[in-house]
Image 1: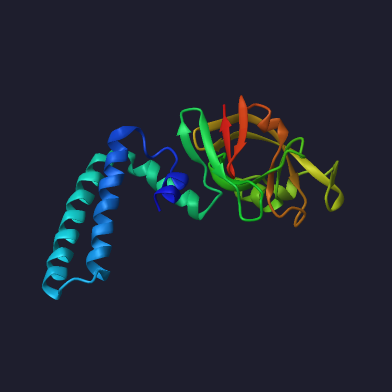
Image 2 (image 1 turned 45 degrees about the vertical axis):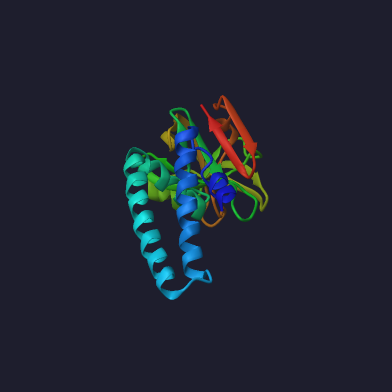
Length: 214
């Protein structure tokens, strides 16, 4: 369990004080389990249960108070375990993403104030928006000119040129981004292309994660 927790929250335990809290909490949880399943007399087991529960509650309150300033970060990391598309800010200029169940990297980004789900596509030279996402952002899609030829996995298509003021992934921001809008039902996800990814100082893949550093 400790290994799983440190893997899930690699930046949550920093220094000996945090490690001590983790060990103490683990000890109390172990004592609680023993009191529940151990071969003890009924009275002794009941006393052990009450002592374990009260002790765990006390240390839980102390730990929660000690981590009160980190609650938003822990919450974001918890969401990232459930939804790999959540970008977790690990510093002022870097975010971390977990790989999706299908092996690809996805990310929810704030695009001009609207949430858009992107697929990281190093094979795409530019950012390409789904028709539906472009409509959500606020473009008058029925007035766009789909005249630029494009070649995708589904064959030849045509896209329309647009410009995005801001794409924001956690603490990482990209401004004044040239992008294209695909025709209806041509893309399953909007694509985060190399014209954005090339602006990064580093993009590091490790342990089913990617760290984007600006």
